[in-house]
Amino acid sequence: MVAAALAFFVGLVQGLVHGLGPDHCAALATLGTSSRGDRFAAFRVAVRFALGHALMLGALAVLCVAMGIGISEAFERWAEIAGGVVLVGLGVAALFFPSALRHGHPHLPGHDHSHSHPPADRSARISTAAGALMAVSGARALLLALPPLVVGGAFQLEAWTYLPGFALGILVSMGAVGLLVGAGAVRLGDRLQRIAAVAAGVIGVYWIVDRL
Image (cartoon, rainbow, N blue to C red; front, side, top):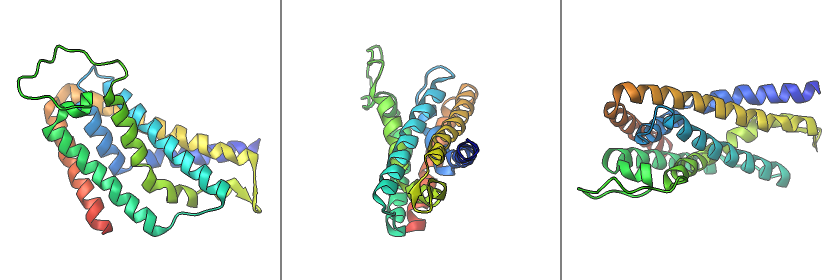
């Protein structure tokens, strides 16, 4: 019981820190300010992003541990480049095609906004997909932090609480970012959206150039 609680706590702390990475915050700010809903719209976007991120990381970790395989530095580098491309794409879309992030498709000039979109529209899928795609680059780091899962070459059931703790940490930290973005969007409106989009693009370009 003590081992399970300790593994959960370690995972929780590491998940909290992981969720506050600059690339994650830039993506959450860009997606959250593009939602243009009520002040909690950015929070809902952040939760969807976090769920996609946590599920992808967890699935990759379980698969690698179960199969006894690792992730190379080369794979991690190219995955981080791909994450940078996602960030640049989000930034460009938010600046020039913001409706694509809100509805999953761009609007032409003079488009009538009175039409409705399905409740579970494509914007939710975009947030979840972006979170999942940006999780791939963090899989190697998560695997390196998983020694509690394997003790003496055998699986320890108690230690599997690490992954739920890590996922909860991601949800909490990203959800908090979403709330802050929502509050900022209410005060700053389109200005914050443009700032977030530019920041995402800059961080994405840096991510790509630094790892090439």
